[in-house]
Every structure is written in C-alpha cells, then in structure tokens.
Length: 72
Ligand SMILES: [Zn+2]
Image (tube, rainbow, N blue to C red; front, side, top):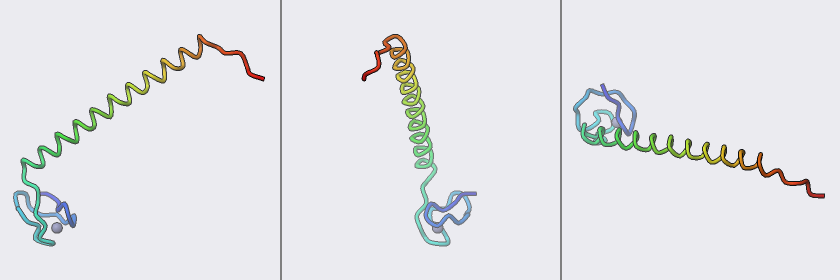
C-alpha cells in the first residue's frame, strides 16, 4: 500500500495516478532516489553534528587552558 503524495489517501502500490485527486504518483525509481537522497542528507547532518561537537569540545578545552583574568 502507498499513500498519495498530494492528498495523502491510501492507494494500491504501482498505480501511476491517485484515484482520489488524480495526482501523478512517483515511480519506484523515484522513490528509491528520494530515499537515497534522504539518507545522504541524514548522514551529512550527522557528520555536521559530530564536527560541531568536536569544535565545541576543542573550544572548551582551549578555554580551560587559557583562563583570562577578569576585566574590571
Ligand atoms: Zn491523491
């Protein structure tokens, strides 16, 4: 079973047009591509988060070693 990308109604797999709204449905190849792109984006975000965390840890470590005197 699949769901219409336009109206969200449930319909059978393999149809090309939604029987409720008539919207053209993505084929299996397109769905595969979208899934792959989504996985790539997910992976990139994980990498970015890891890099950000590493940078924050580095920043915190630097601050511990370079304690600046209070300004007043
Ligand atoms: Zn529809």
